[in-house]
Amino acid sequence: MQFYTAGADPDEVPFTPAIATRGGRTIWLSGATAYPLIHKHPHDPDELRVPAGIAAQTRACLDNVRTALEAAGGTLTDIVEVTIYNTDMDAQDEVNAVYTEYFGPHRPTRTHIGVNRLVGPELKIEITAHAVIPD
Image (cartoon, rainbow, N blue to C red; front, side, top):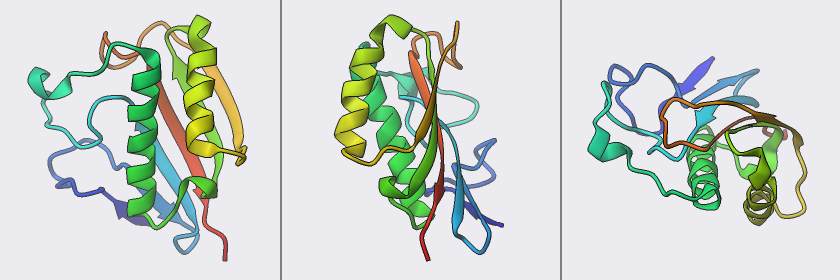
């Protein structure tokens, strides 16, 4: 296994943004929220300010997913599976519009789950993914 911290000091964060297995071909991505991908632990509230709207938070999540994936040598078109955790299922259309901006015609498998709360009370969405880098 290879661990990719996307620039974080591994001793300062309690998780790894991306892990590659199978000779670096399969990438497992941690859940990404609108919080900065790399931030202080314990949390600094000033560092964790996020946009209010779900569309802007979805963009921030997907930017974080892309950052972690690129650190492991992949691109968004290598993603084969996405899981979305959403606190506002009535806003699915907004999420889907932003999602399509990022993925275009690429359509990984996807699960979209409604949840009561995420790690921060102001967070509306979290996205995790798995990717396979072609030979």
